[in-house]
Length: 185
Figure: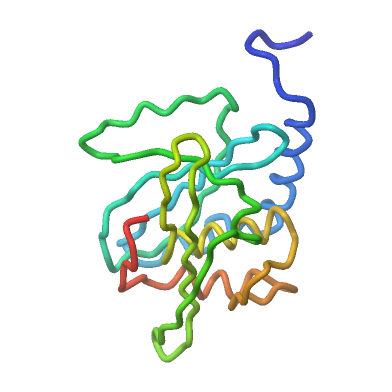
């Protein structure tokens, strides 16, 4: 028996099921729940549309000294954002594959806790309204990581993740306190 509601795109469930299976391999569960009281999560909402996965973005605050946990969720393909304009300036979608093969990309390097870290910067022009967004810092790092996990492909640029084993570098990147907010997006 089928569920009531709008028809789903062909292949949408397969796309989402494949993504969930890849993500499950990298789930740390509650392993770090005992750490620091200053924790926050970054929600990475994925949407399957036109046979591709997209990440939905909003602008966020610049709160510092937090333990970061990327949380991936799936939203319905006919989702329509209705943000509070006092809290969110804009909402936009970026194809997940863009974070492996961008049109406009540059990077810089910073030293954090004695370790050289790549700071990714993606410029994405939304084809719907022509607005160009700069996605950088921790948000870009999370987007690259999720694209690596789900799509399982090598990016067209240098990364400081071990592509053969993503878990150790992801723990280093996300589960240590983030002292410097590099961007609001």
